[in-house]
Image (tube, rainbow, N blue to C red):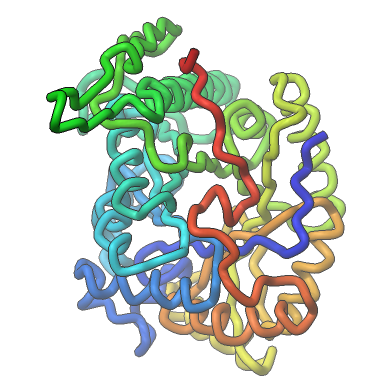
Length: 399
């Protein structure tokens, strides 16, 4: 099985608003007035690059953030509103040099042709550092923005009807990624000749109709954007149970999972590897990253007190799909080492307060991991695939 066991841990950070705690915007370091400026996002990504992180993910959605999983809320005391994740990534790409840029895209209401073009463009703008995080949505209010499909109301993901809907949405997402990947390959690497003397800009025989016919999409191709610098930008997805594990196994280069301990991590990795084998991808590299929401301070009591203070501001206890870690960078390094032993090749950390916990990661956790010989001391590649140890794939349509 292709478990991708690197010498070093891989490390990513998930950027969302002012941080992953709902009251994070009220902290003095949060900069909420700058949330919709280019400088704010540039500062976050350059800080992540300072810490030599593999990549950042940028959250996105098709409806306002909500404290409810499946419907809007009426709260006015939490951050609402976003900039477009792909456009943020394109803006920060020219002012960064090595870090990967992985915006979230919602496959449910976005055409794969548009996404293939947008991420290919990001790969050109960043000189080979683009990826995407594919996401689904089952929210009625988000479907209503587009008017092209109806989504039945579901109150819980546990009902049989909800499970059927979610399985269908993940199947659609897998097909969406398949179309995107084929469109990236629809231009061969040397399709552009650009010979001014002969007047030949392009070799038309090296552009390919993908002629994709699936259950959800019918796409002729080719793309209008030449094959990206990486050939295939990195595809990632968050997965919590068997249905999304199959999406990761079928289509992703990196899957994010949310185990609460090493035993659960081991079981999750085993399930994904079994799905990977069933999908015929056993020999392909596939990273499995653990997600953790982190409150980091030099004193564990300080981290706990900060979390309690933020909970009081939010009017309730902070909850998450991912394990919540509260403590020191050294204690977090211990936890990451333990989880790595369970088969995870990297981690995506969600800073509770970006202005506080992102620098704690880059300036304290990273040096601690370096002291232990677990993390790079310099970037070793110029592309995101290179950082992740993924070879540049051959074009499926090339003769």
